[in-house]
Image (cartoon, rainbow, N blue to C red; front, top):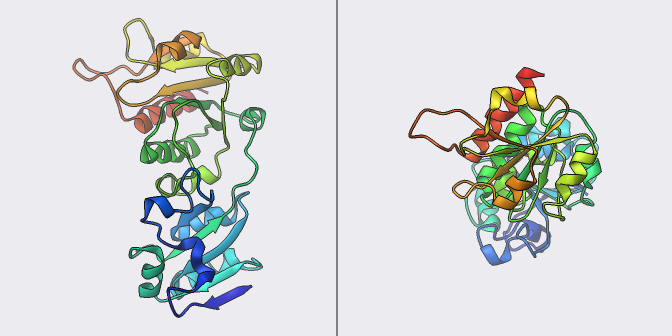
Length: 268
């Protein structure tokens, strides 16, 4: 274990990092090997301090030096290569200069995800990896206790989501609501009020939500464009909107979530 110098891109020891730009061979793709991939020193550092079991790292010498403190005592292969050799392995030049791969731990239960403080976010149909990653980053920044994924959501551990989240998807607890929308009843039984975000008339302005829901809140968001399904809206306790000027009726899902997270944090 420890530092291993790689001189040619065909070395089988770095196969976990190979062909990341080839969709049907990617190790993080759904139905594949299910590996978690972190890119860059910031995200790799967060992976190293997470519950995800690290398998190996691949990078240029300079990036390993920047992570020396994080890597102290870590007993996994640390493959050092030139930038060109690394690009041949990965399939493209990686400006961030370092990658780490990890296995997925056992998924968290709903109880484990919500066992904390702050609101939780519940998502339906959020299939865009970048939006999902940005939402996790906002959740980490604004005190959200966890994220629950309903039907139609993409994989938060897909490489692009991990990268856009700046590694916070590895830190914010998340799990799946496999019973939909029945799983929302489980949240209510745990003391949550379920607030569904929709621009439709008659919904409660966000700043008035606390007048209707005093305890912990589960914030329910749908995909951009279609929004939440009628089934999800009917299963919520409250319909909530972010007031906007006439002619504007929607926000990017990560932006809308950030506004909601901030307002709840501000209001206590």
